[in-house]
Image 1 (cartoon, one colour):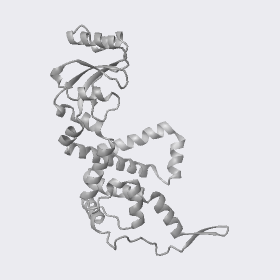
Image 2 (cartoon, helix red, strand yellow; image 1 turned 45 degrees about the vertical axis):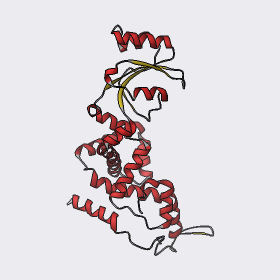
Image 3 (spheres, one colour; image 1 turned 180 degrees about the vertical axis):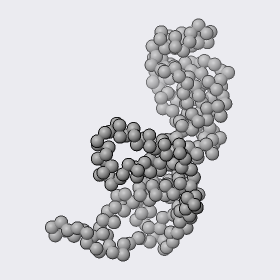
Image 4 (cartoon, helix red, strand yellow; image 1 turned 60 degrees about the vertical axis):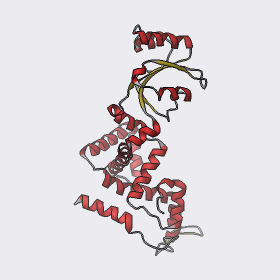
Length: 287
């Protein structure tokens, strides 16, 4: 039954908004007075217009995301347990101020857990999109799993390179005996990685695991990099790549555009349309 309700919700999102182009929504009782401050009269229409301008795009985006998330991402016990753990974490970190914040926002703990579940479903929407388009992501961002050691002195980098190549040094030895702040742990590096210079990235992203350890200097920041690709088969560390690419603005926007178009998102209110166009242009997929 719950699944049927979710599907019906998507149908409402897709087809129930009908009306004239450039229409503007209006309250039937917009002139109803809800407050007076001296000679100033505040009506429901005043409040509605202010809320629409300030929060309208957020409310609409979040509600649409909730509908889509409920359909695309099953609410599992694992997701609910994770949300509950997040709640406990926030309560422990913020103490009484957390409870006060909930009260100020008119939320119970149960309602807040539901918002955390919505957040997790929204995150899963994007990671699902990356997984479904994994080959394209690999082509666009050239992710590799690599170990990189950064040095400020060429002599240190050269010595470490020679030692790693002939086996006389381990990575831990290099970290202990030479001046580097690198962790020495394998990491996912992509075209979007900003930690290293572009010259280094162009070399590293074109390498294979069989190339072994290599060194490249960067004129951009004066560093020397000793590096190697750990594994050529990206499917062996697919989850790590997905986690690294999540949060990339272009990917997130493309993912939202995909799902909002899939479920026929359409805005008929001109004021709301303009607000969303300013705040979240990627979700305006209507022709």
